[in-house]
Amino acid sequence: MRTSLTLKHALVMALVAFSLSACGGGSDDLDAYINRIKARPGGRIEPLPEITPYETFSYVADRQGIRSPFRPDTLRAARGGSGPRPDVERSREYLESFPLDTLGMVGTLYINETMYGLVQTSDGLIHRVIPGNYMGQNDGRITEIAESEIGLVEIISDGIGGYIERDAAVGLSD
Image (cartoon, rainbow, N blue to C red):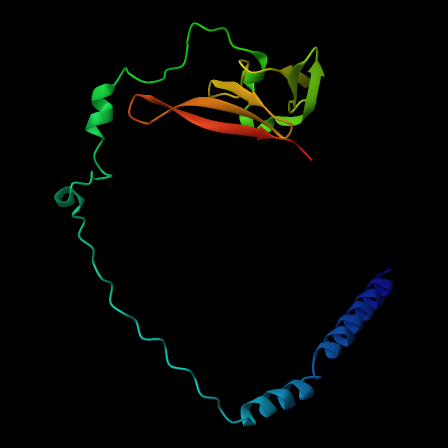
């Protein structure tokens, strides 16, 4: 038993020695390539571009009668409650639960001389809308329906406590 174990060890050692001998050598072509590259004449390195100094800018809009963008608009802030506001008493319609960019117009439909817009939601359902309906998450009231788009007016925050109206549209999907 001991001789077969020693024989196995000898075979493993011979196999390892043979494997390691294959790893050595074979770098002659690499040495020749490196020597060829080193023998090439050196190239000219382009100089770095000249850096122009930064010119500072002094904001002088207050002197010219222009409002500073870093201070709130006191005229709009003074108005406060005037202007458009979302109707919090109005019950929400189903299409107002979807962001406007996830809705797509898929066509129009005429029923008794009334033009309906066909709107597809992200869940694949198609809904009929007419001017006066609401859709989108910014109190978007539909103002017109054309063959190629549905126009609406959204009421969005102006960032200083008030609201402004913004035109938007949902175009006909391809």
